[in-house]
Image (cartoon, rainbow, N blue to C red; front, top):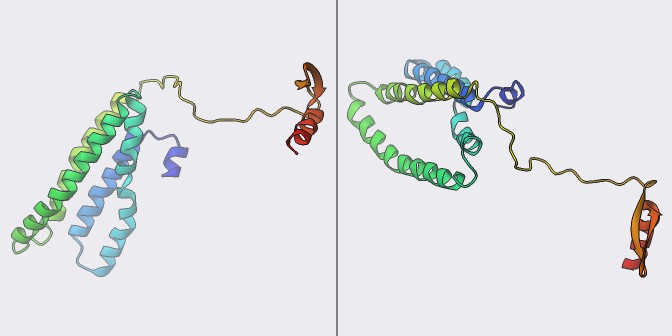
Length: 177
């Protein structure tokens, strides 16, 4: 994924590639008859899981800061509901269809993978020409370093005088002791 970020792919484009790999992986595994074919499918599988991690990135980029928490909550709730009911539904569906077609659920997963692929393609083309707006959020904090040769104001007793930074550091160290 770092390669895609380095080449400046958008999040939606990376999700589209992820769905393509998922569909290819599901179709490959559903048609596999030998062990080596399953192992080849395992080589494709790591590239299928980018959507989950990039969903939060897409949300944080396209929503206002006060809307992000509500969107995260909504995505988490939907994900939980799908995990709870999806596992039960697909286990039941597999038990019903295994006698007719042992790879039906994998083919169904590949067919259902087309839906988020199309949605991510639409998101990619809609956001492709929208320029990035300047974000007011702080992305990186850099410390301010004062060179030792520059004079700075230091309070000595009741007066403020200009002293070299090295001298001020020595004074402050001696005051701490």
